[in-house]
View (tube, rainbow, N blue to C red):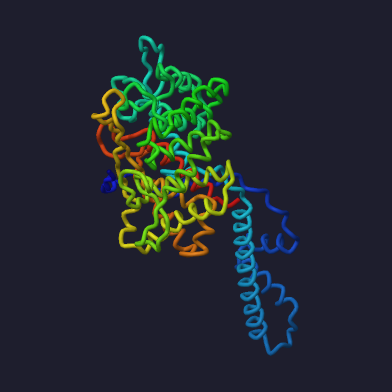
Length: 463
């Protein structure tokens, strides 16, 4: 079941201009002889220069020049002209010197604007510090990690595998210069949260491992430099969880398949399960008559159970996942065509009646039969940061090329700008808000939001 939600209240600091820094003036070049003369005359003042010219001409003009009055008039007029020229020349030289000094002054260090990316990253790190749970659990030892939300850590609550994995991803992205949160302790906590039978699960999923959470944890541990020998056994367990006889519901879910693919591409790029999973995702696309019959994805993969109605969040998830798979595994023409059609579907939203809702957050429920009693269902509530996923899909390498061949680069730029603006508007001080409840500041949402802004900053940067 897929539910659309109104976009949460936007909040965030407005961007302001950077504080000026005059820097250190560069040494000026030595003045030429005429410039020194004019500057010296200018310092004397226009009246002094005029008087000097007047006196000089009075001594040079012949006394026979139409009487004494004519001599005085001619000399006074010439003196006034010389004074004006000297004043203008000196003023021009002074103006040029000032402009040259200003242009030659090297700028000082750039001061980040209010709400700049470095400030957001600092805010996210401080939020991670505030939300960190450090507790001692009998049978597990000391745990250092995060629950699902950054707002539910007072008093300290039990860290979860899901929250701690995304917190570790965030920590690796931010790369802080201090050791107030130690990556090694967080990674060790993930190992201690491993279930007795192997693998990991979400807090609401009980005591059995689930592939979508296990793959996320394995991807985070691999990024943190975990011992490949320790990862190997867990990778095999994750691959075994993908057996259709074991988890048919999971294999029919776009959310589950994309999560597992992305996690294993990080942790086990040589896994044979990756090719099979990619085929499941490619075959799960469905054509949408409302948007040029372009193929897209819904919450459920086509051909399986559930609702395959087109969804921007799930289509963007699939496009991002297939793009990563293409980088690691390569791709054939059919796989590339499906991936690019997903991009065309997202771009077609600019002209579609329902395109405005593409950036609205949505929520779905992944249902599985209970392990002990098949008559009861396990329910996993999943929330999708739609704007972040759409932005990430539109920032894949193929997006601009696909837009140029179809909707046009202007449409691509506008759709991407709208998605990034929505992502930025949903944070305050580096903390992304789903709502104002205890579960309203998800760690995974901060990771996705900051990832989008970092990637976009790199995309628009021009050296």
